[in-house]
Length: 419
Image (cartoon, rainbow, N blue to C red; front, side, top):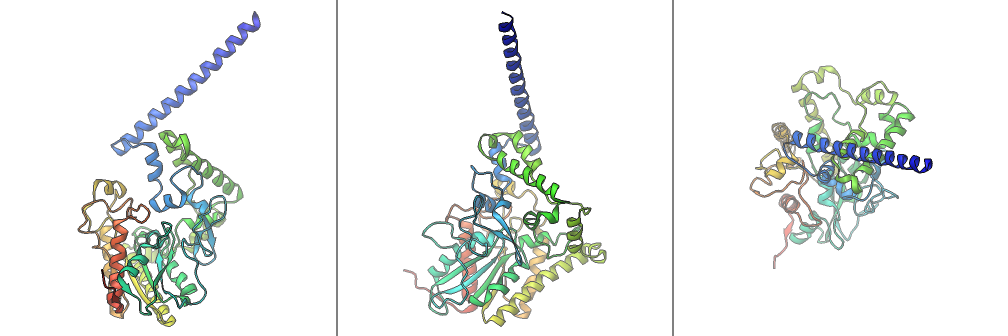
């Protein structure tokens, strides 16, 4: 009898404990949901918040769910290009080629059966040049072959030379290494570069994106203990964004807190060295005007170097400055949510204005700022990437058509008869 009473009491205690735990979790979820709703002035499902924490390029790479692989898990350090993708299990990207970009393998000699154009830049260039659908080619390649005849009469081939967060001088380095087997090089950039031209920063224009620290974590972390803890926390954060927990606002807040971020201090042996390496002297950084002049001059320098290198290779070159949501487009409500801060717009206009003066040196720089000015519908899916569903994208289709038209008009390509 005593044993039965004791067992019953134990059961009641366990039940009370479970109820208390469930109540606590429910309360935490309610508070988390309320706080996030108040912060954003509207309710957003947790799954959508997890999705928004990754732009469309990252979602394409990591998948829309079902895997706890983080974006950084798909990356690999490159000795010259800072960071690229890999295709190894468990988190590799199957479409990554031997050098770590997504798409066709790079040849080692010129292909006489194709007119090969290297498209270099960041994630927007990558999506424009990727093979996104079986049986189809990239947006730019399909537009070129549909509308124009190459100088050799052979079909165009566009090689993807873009990776998310790449910026100059990565485009220059890529072309310098692989430019001897192509017929032309075009770049599509500007958005990633403008982040390093923001007054108040103290970093060199050449500083790579934080992905570099992710694939070289010993640089960002103070010793192997911190490195191991950072990896462990990152795995938990990735797991929280999948399965049942992807519907929880509390899990979203926890994942945001756990996600490793680059060290912002300089007391670690790696961080201190890296910070010093990537810093500019105070006589440049203390004045916003001087800092902006300096950084734009570096940007222009790398475009000039690409132009000179292309001439040495005997190939064509053209440099496109990409459109951005903050300039020349009336944003829809969806686009406003993806780009809540458009204050960089005037700075970006000034960057483009100065780079266009390179035409005085016979360097082919083209602005795409007005590309979407007449578009009333939603073009952008986040802060910079046009909406895309496989090969269905008005934004990328317009971009490809304009770029192909600029190349053909400048370089004298014949237009194909349209039936």
